[in-house]
Image (cartoon, rainbow, N blue to C red; front, top):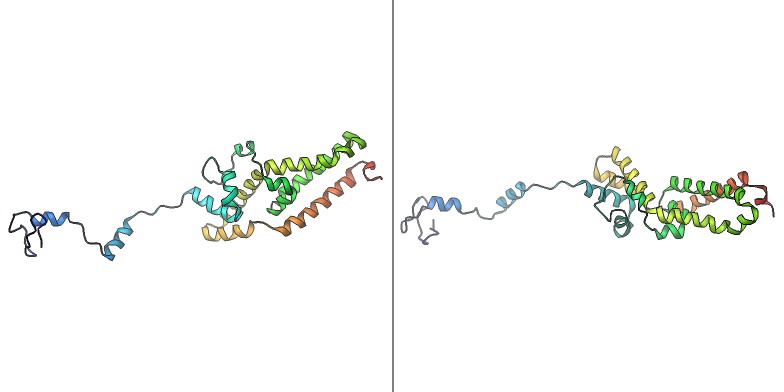
Length: 228
């Protein structure tokens, strides 16, 4: 055994250095064990592992549901002031954020993002409002502004509140799937299947909504609306 004080080589069983009389036992106790694979493995086992936080879980699940646009767009729009979460804050509704796709595609964008229920009620509300305006404005005034008014209302709703609608839609579906699937990996798979986008849904459901709007105007609108 070598003395670290003077460098003298001593026998393995020596307690004191033969040259400088330094205690070898205390020196050995202060010397850390060599770095061997066994020691490294033991140290790794003693390091506490950080459990995923609520923000990490919410971020993972919402990313699975939304798809590729989550990292580049929706996370920043939804959580620009904090960490991802699965709680709906009323402040989110009070601070609408512009959505270009909602402006350009309107109801079709809602259907594209599989928000079929929201798309139905938005279209129903616009169609009923349009029918009421037929009676209130009269034939001449209504015909002059009907097209721009119908499109304008849709643009305001989907353009300004589209991100809020989608956040609400995503959180509700995430909570529903997590309630029946506690395994994070299984939940991610089911969210990926339920979420994302659908061009077929965008086209097919939009056609159905247009038919619904026409039928509302036909049965509830004034006679002059359908007379040449």
